[in-house]
Length: 167
Image (cartoon, rainbow, N blue to C red; front, top):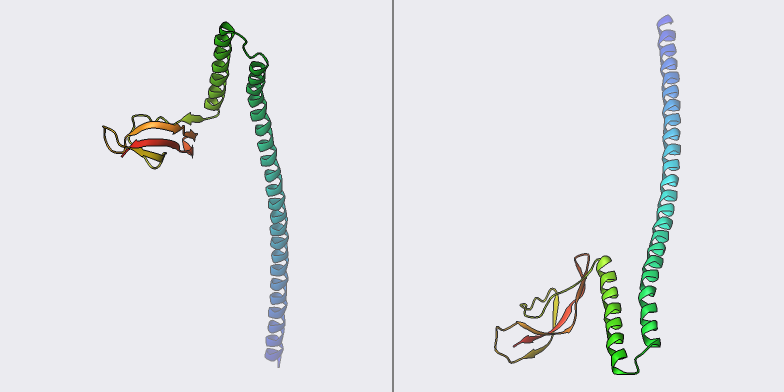
C-alpha cells in the first residue's frame, strides 16, 4: 500500500508539474502574442506615416518644379507683352525668345531630361517611332528627318523620337 500511495503521489506531482508547465507555456504564448500584436500595430502605423511622408515629399517636389516652371512662363509673358514693332526690335525679341527656350532646356536638363539624337542615325525601334518612309539615296532605315523630338528622363525613355526614314 505504501508503494501504491507513493505511485499516486508521484502521478499527482507529475500532474502538478505538467499543469505548471502548461501554465508557463500559456503565459509565454500570451506574452509572445501580445508582443507580436504590438509590433504589428507599430508596423501598420509606420507604413501610414511613411506613406504620408512620401505624399508630402511628392507635393513639395511638385511645388518646387512648378515654381521653376513659372519663372519660364513669366519670361514668355514678358516677351509677349513687348512684341516687336519694327525690324530692330524683332531681332532683339527673337534673341529673347531663344534665351527663354534655352532656359527651359537647361531646366529640363537639370531635372534629368535628355534629348534623343536621331538625324543621320540608324532607326532603332526602342527609341524611335517611324512615322514616314521615303525613297532616297542612302542606307535603308537611316533617319533623314526628325518630326518630333524624343526624350529620356534619367536614362529611361519617356517619349520616342518620331522620325522619317529611308525606305
